[in-house]
Image (cartoon, rainbow over the protein chains, first blue to last red):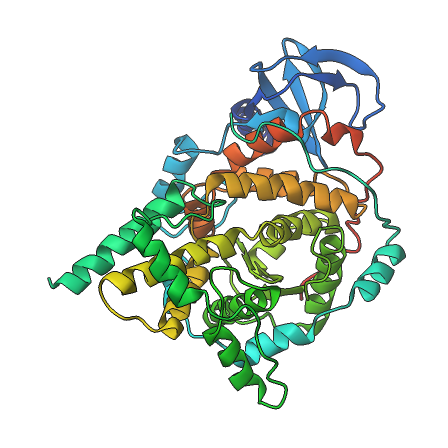
Length: 169
Length: 304
């Protein structure tokens, strides 16, 4: 009895380990811009290496706006926009599996029958709703109220220019 | 098929083409191949440049009057608001507000604070969460922003909400939708000179219908990338962590293409993969110079 449950447990453990490691292995990405690899998920953490554009990396973990990656044997953290995740986008295996099982990777039941919630057609045929519009307008807050709200969360206004950069590759 | 119908179809195609090929910013009329068309448009839409105040009339009548008298050639801020109000009311006709006054008040405070960092602080900004499980958000001219409950529920911090609202605010600041609607109205005016007499009212009605649809439908890809880039900066100016919108976009990358809740979003926006890549490119190292922003996970209002 004991033996059997032990075998069961170790089998389960093995399966879980397999499932986890394959999930991690499936998460890869491509480096979008050169960046420093840091020992931890904050901007003044120790630099442990570098990544260069178009490097393929394994994505190990995510913490806020940071990703833990493994690149050419080195493990470290980079900001979110340094790496493009390429596991879920496009009509890839996950998508195909999603259709086959009726579930997507997020565990949500997927509609494959064309039920799509708010469609472009819904919006085209919708009728103007005056009551809801008035209700929406009734929630409007003034700039001063918003400022107070911001201050209560410790937010203060800062001056940054809009990004100057190529808008199209 | 009669000629009129044929003509209408052609026009529709032309509109789609105009939108898809990204003729957003220009003031040129897409079908304006001959000067004569321009004259006709001028004649029909030039008209008033100022709206008379309708103080004594009921709000509905006044709103309708405003709508009927839109100067499509050169819309005033008041015109823009009247158009946006109608587009928004139409979206609300498809999905009403979530019945939670605290939620709506909260979203208005965050949204208004982010909008206050933009170049259009004088607009009467309105924000609302609509009752739909879809993952999406909408902007309409004049300061109207709606976000679906489906998207709201995926957010994990106030900084993320600020980023999403920042994207929509940027659309309004740049008048992205208004410009597409103007194009539609001006083309309709041109066609009416050539084929049939469409009343100005009808032209506005059609432009607004287009507006409701295009608030969800393909804007130019560049307009979306621009809104991502500007929205990120607006949230940062408001004191938030600059990566809020990037985080949301990355979460969306993880939703499959077959997830019905993002069907419309994916139809109408570039794929999140491309948006993340584009935002990365445009922000370059400038985003790294933004530090000390707040994420405020705990203040994000939890839906009942």
